[in-house]
Image 1 (tube, rainbow, N blue to C red):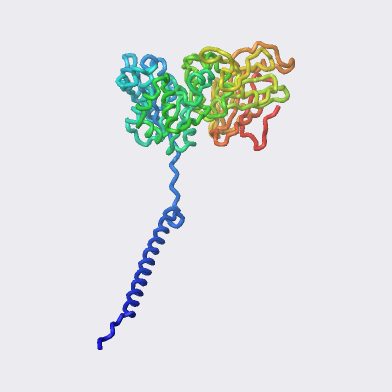
Image 2 (image 1 turned 120 degrees about the vertical axis):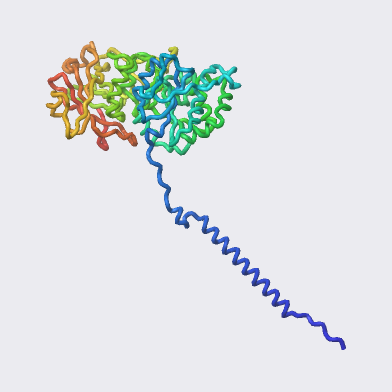
Length: 490
């Protein structure tokens, strides 16, 4: 008898159990590591991610690089404009000439309060040069590229301007400090002229007024700048080309009202006396307008304004309005520049519109001419102001007194404040608005203001009080912070 063939079921069962247990262990092992990995990528679970990154320190003037487009022909006359705002050994930048400086410019010495100069690279070899409508502007666009190649360290902003641009540096630094310089940022101002906007652009930063580009934007922009220049052979202005290149990168213009191209002509005192409620950043085209102080030439006028700017740039040209109800006078102060007296209680909302003492830029066609509202100049005694211009400035502190004996005896003076003196420009030569309240006898206005700087973050402007207009030829006013619910009404 043959032995019976036997299947070992227990053995097979054991193998199956071993395999199942092994698979389960492998599964547990895999799931454990997946779980551990998922914990590692959860930011809220990791102590390292709970540590906030330190904010970058506030912007300072050393982190700005200025790029000034200059001409050998215009520089001798414009050098004094430049030297009024440039701060030797503090500001950094380059002046780019269109050709090698001539003997009336050289020798170029740094102890003359000047930065290094460069001669713009020869752009005639570029393919676009021969077909460009105005090939000489190509070199102005490329100054940003040539400056970036200089390799300056610790740069947050590149600021471009012309040789007749005047910057107010403290205000510029404060303004740029509001923006994130680690992003692509393009900041500047548009023209005051509708004609310029129509002929060039309403959406670009005008180069004469100056504009600022963040470092990351410039770093990206210069990579394809020459290629972009070739795209726009029909643009006749360097700032227009550069603006187009920035727009092609998807970066919009941030408009700030303190950049002034000054596309205006003749007497701009009406414009400056009702400055927009924004920090004054720049001036341009001063050779094309009347001197801003009518008793001085252009260069002395700028120097005179800078005496006020050196004490407090934040308030420069900022408008404050107050009223003297007994005489029915309205006072409009443009700090550091002018004070107007109106023999009528005109609302602040009206006085913020500039008097049209100026004329349009270029060909005069049909209105509108300006990018802002204006008031017409008339011979109406109730609408025409008595005009006073800035004469002198004195700063008082708790441990010092005024250098003028007449000021020492002034009971309205307090410590830690600034006194501005404004002198009548000329007789108004009009009859009074009201027979018994003429302001013709006022020859001097003294305006007191806080010695602290004006903060434009959330700024609503400042208010003022009339301290004295009685019996003397001097009116006294004081600028102060407005009360929380204060409304200046007539």
